[in-house]
Image (cartoon, rainbow, N blue to C red; front, side, top):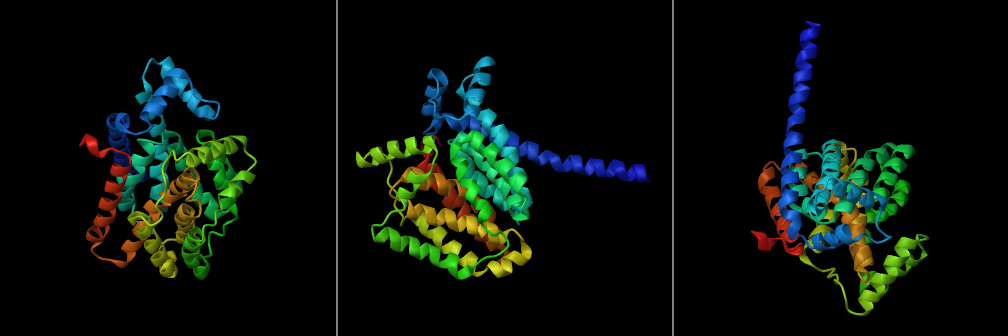
Length: 330
C-alpha cells in the first residue's frame, strides 16, 4: 500500500510540473520571434558584435562568450537570459500570488514584453528580486543578500534592493502610504527634485550613468515622463484602493503588506524622479513587477473574476506593445 501511495504521489508531482515546461517553451518561442523587433535589439547586436562597454555586468560578457563559442547569434543570447529568468519568475509568482493564472496572464501581457523581449539583463535581476520577497518577509537576511547579490551580477541597478531590508514586511501604516502619492505630486508640481540624492550614491557606474543622462536631458535628448498619463494615474488609484482594503487582503495573503509597500514605492518613484527618466523608469519598472501579484488582490472582492480582470490585461498589453514599438509586427 505504501509503495502504491509513493508511486501515485510521484505521478501527481510529475504531472504538475509539465505545465511549467510548456509555458517556458512557449515564452522562449515568443522571445525568439519578438526580440528582433524590440528597441534594444540593435544595441545588444552592437555589443555582441563589437564588444560591450566597461559598465556592462560580467554575466553579460560571460553569456556573450558562451554564445559566440557555440557559434550562434545574439538571439541565442536573449534565449539564455530568458531560460534563467522565466522559471525563477514563475516559481516566485506561484508562491506569492493569490491567483497564479491571472498573475501569469498579466506578466505575459506586460512585464514579459518589457523584460524578456527588451531589457534582458534587468529581466534576470528582476527574477531574483521576486524570489527575494519571501526571504524578505521571513527576515532571512542571508538568503535576501545572496539573491540580491545574484541580481546585481545581472544588472547593477539591483543595488537598490539593499535598502528594502529595512522595510517592515508585516505592518502597514495606511495613512503614511496613502499620502505618499499626493505628496509626491505636490513635490513634483512645486518644481522640487530628489534626483540630486542619486549623486551621493558611492558607485562609480551609477555616477557615470547619472552624468551621461543628465547631459542628455540638458541637450533635449531622451524620453520625458508624463506623470499624468493614463496608466500612471490608474496605478495611483488602484494603489490607494488596495491600501484601504489591505486589512482584509492580508487575512487572505500574508505577503500583502510588503507587496503593497513595494508597489507604492514603484508608483511614487515615477513622480519623484520624473526629471531623470533613467532613474525613474529603472526603479519603478524594477520594483513595479510586483504589480502581477498586487492587481489580483482585487479579485478577492469579485465573483466575475475574468470580466473584472480582462480590462486590466488589455490595457497593459496595449501599453507594452505600443511603447516597445511591437504593434507594427502584427
